[in-house]
Image 1 (spheres, rainbow, N blue to C red):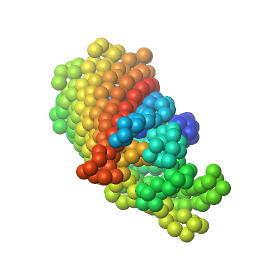
Image 2: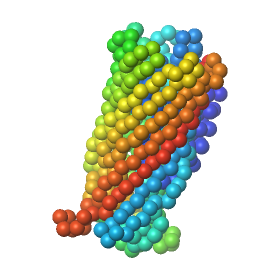
Image 3: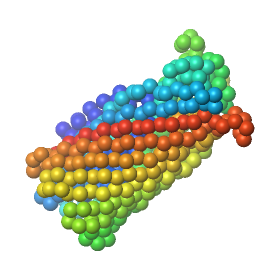
Image 4: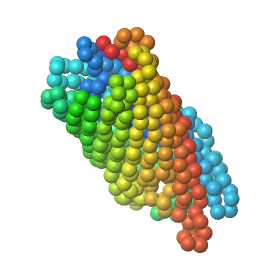
Length: 389
């Protein structure tokens, strides 16, 4: 009951914590970075957290994210987004039921994208903001089939927030009317994983997350709120597949890597207004995204472990739709982290990630004039505590 209470409190805190504009960095939990995706191999590989003689493992922490974007047009004008700091909490709880089964719960900010610009010259000089964010809550069960194979299955609940403040558009033709839209939604999905302890030193895994359709209800206000209407929309978050592995080179030095595919669909988000009598598409032009990550971890002493890693992620939003409202770019990241064991049952982890990238908007005169240049950088500080009992 105590753990379920903590989960509820953190979920309530997270709703306000991600209510801003940020692009999620390719970081992840401080203790696992960069040992492969959201965990030492996969986020559903929960047995790695339970040591011999332990029954439960509780991890809680946060990511402090500072993201900025800069847009420079063909005339040399440039604007930089607001420097907004966002604190995103997460937690993991694993309970060993017996020698073969373990129950687990996790919560984290799975997706977020958006920036805020003052006097946006692409948007009639309006102050603009854009945010699409999703908090994911997962509850699952892991089964140790034998000494080699482990299976895990998780039910996912996604809670989404959508915030759009920019010029009202008709198929990306922006009118000199500021529209402010807010929406919340919820969806259900599932994640499964297969983990293989191929040898004493080699561990492999494959994890698949289903498509999650978030059903949103929102409101758009025009003319400083004098005109408004409610709307509904269905927002699909992509199916993803991650293959990962780790190899223990020596008793102290390990290496790991993973590759992920996010199957974004090129379907517009349709806002169906309830009283205005029409539907408005929000074109994003999404395509498939690939992320590749890798790193090393080193057990320096009995109580201190270091990690270093890096990776690359491709662009998801099509170039012709990438602008100050849907700011997206391919990029790389580098990360450093450590874990210090404070007592026999408590350890603290800290990690830092720097990510950056750039892309180009599609010109209004392709082949004649270049499009505006988009540059971005993300700094992420992660702090986590673990209690083993």
